[in-house]
Image (tube, rainbow, N blue to C red; front, side, top):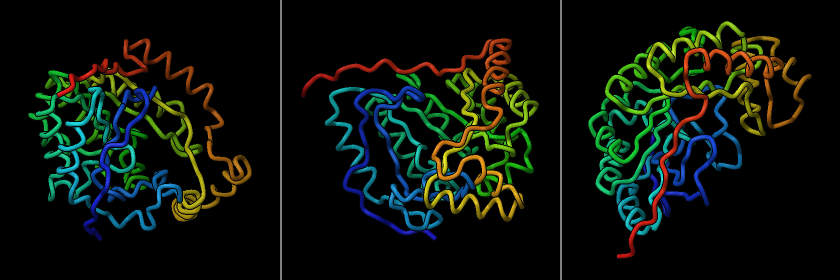
Length: 286
């Protein structure tokens, strides 16, 4: 189900670029997401989205984007994909993300797109134009197993399709990387799977690979996730409850070893475990 909404503000500002993704301004054109990944933290009560499968489209987003960009005094990276996927299937019909990128290109603002979708290739030409300033695309891939990705991320393209997208973007000169996050305890945290993902990212031409070996769970999202575990992995909920209780951060029991192996394999391939950021600049007053 989709429905239109009017937003009051489109770009939320960070005092400085965030340390993981270099994002200064966060842009969400939609509320809710069709990918319906079982682990998505955006279901949490603090975000105020009652039904995460009910996608709300910000019909005045492009007008707000034009207005807000003109008022920015610092040219910083605009990030999209933190609360939902900007290239969920609905984007193929509406094209809101593509039109927003055109506006950002015209204003010469840097962009970081975070997605699980092959649809980002549709906007390759505008991303090339933005890349004259700075454009990065990060593809989230949490497992090398396509069948497992279908179960955990039912509305998104499978992992192998995302890795092919990494290869295509990289071949076209776009700064592209892979995000191995979250890594679900007892589901995605096998050593061989993590190392295989690093190898696949390297083969696809990823410039960076970033990983976080665990998952976050709180209130409404925890209840949803545990319901998915009961359906997909019977008995695993009890293991989570015993180990993590009600804590927000749920690191894999193997997190320290996985981090060590991950760093070693990235170093062997010459892949950075941090992405290069755009260096912001002050804009002249009009």
